[in-house]
Amino acid sequence: MYVKQGCGSCHAIRGVGGTGGADLGRPPAEHRTMSQYAGVLWNHAPALREAMQKRGIPWTPFEGPEMADLIAYLVSI
Image 1 (spheres, rainbow, N blue to C red):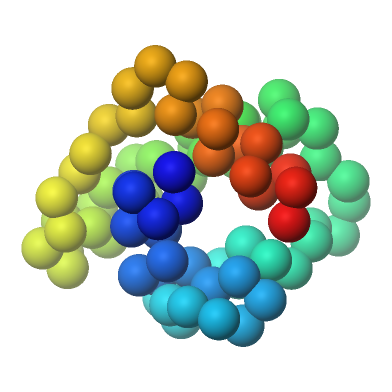
Image 2: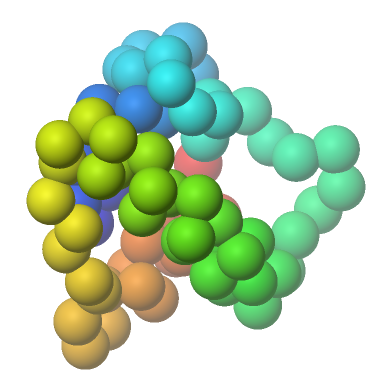
């Protein structure tokens, strides 16, 4: 999902990738549950959509289990 959704164009993982957003490979100060990650992504969506519009990147909504897949990936790194 990280690749399919184009997250790497703005977000790095451990210093590799985009620089416009947070480095997703650096753990948060506190442990997060999968539900907390979902909340962070949900709350981030409006600003993300606006930033994507400004850069001319099409907004692609998540379908089916894609959000769960992305959260599982984020938790695993």
